[in-house]
Image (cartoon, rainbow, N blue to C red; front, side, top):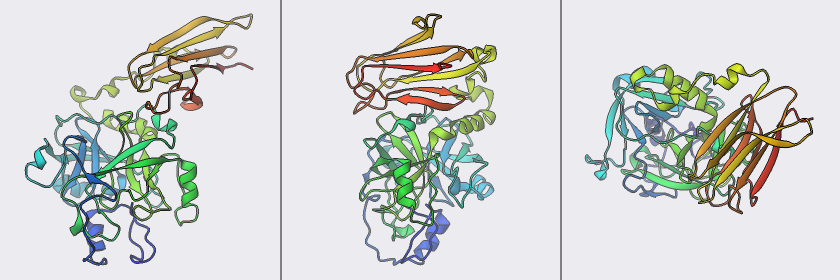
Amino acid sequence: MQFLVCFMLSVILIQIVSAQEIISLSSNVNGNAKKKQRIIGGNDTKLNSYPWFARFEGEIICGGSLITSEYVLTAAHCVAGKEERLKQSAKIKIGALCSKENNCGQYSESKGIRDIFVHPKYDASAFKNDIAIVRLDSASTIEPVKMDSNGISEFYSEEQTFEIMGFGLQQTYHTYLDLPTRLQQTKVKFVSNIECADAYSSSATKFIANKMLCASSPGKDACAGDSGGGLYDPTNDILSGITSWGIGCSSEIYPGVYARIATFIPWIEAAVCRNTSLDNKPSFCKKQKLSDTREQCDGDIYELDFQKDNSKNVLNFHVKEKDRNGYYNKTIKSGKIRKALKYKSREICVPKDQCYQVVVRSSSSQGLCCGNGTGFFRIKKKNKTEYSSRMREQRLKKVYFGNCS
């Protein structure tokens, strides 16, 4: 991945750059660099692999992802400070696959830009909150990609593989003339924030925030021009990150860094719902601001989240209330999940003097993890996770929450 260029032939610290920066890059780079027909470590993308992928056309070379019929998710550094110019002259091609007039046989739509919303706390100097949404001038008929709205990225392990895609440079020292004519894609592995922060500890850029997500594989990475594109989780069929920054391209030391979408869901949904007409609002805009449980609760609200993995097993859960004798015999909420990767959430109002038990059963000896997608259960209080588990090689789990002292 790349940053703004500093000392081109020695130390490179570059944010994934716009077209203008790529042009200036070309004037400082050997134009005879050997051209390769693939993103770093990647391949030509097959037909209809990422129909929701969006390509900016015009002033900037960046990617994006269609998240509703009217909105594209991208990186803030792609559009910040250029909003008015982009609205006047830029286009976004939804479903972009190649530069040929017929888009190599894949259906696509070209849209103008109606509005741009950059995260209000975007900090270019520290690469924080590198996220923006772009409103199209008309609705797209292409199916949007699902976002990580359930916080699945919290449960990723080193086994997790992502797919990244873009039309960016294929080597650090290539020029804008070397951009591929067909969408490139490759696979990278999850890197924990602790490991990622350790890798960057000796660099000038030491800060890896919780709202960032890291990924890396030997010889594979995004590069300049891939900014704003998606970090796609094929196991759970969700978009988990936005291509943001890194040091160099395909560095053996520094992982690529992405904006972690799950941490921005409240802002994304609020911005989309606030600026979308009533007749075209996405389903997440129809959520009640406060449930009856929250309005009537004289205590603490706990949220219990359950997601089944991708296997054929069945996930059962029961929430039980502690009685006067200290037993948990009364079930107050229960549920069963059979469908792969199905997510359910339950809210519990916990009085100040009450303790509850949640019993989770999986019909699989593998629990909710390990090669079958990202299943989990989680207990949250005031939007903060108090307990989470993937039940690795466990069929049964009992957890207590509330006022249990």
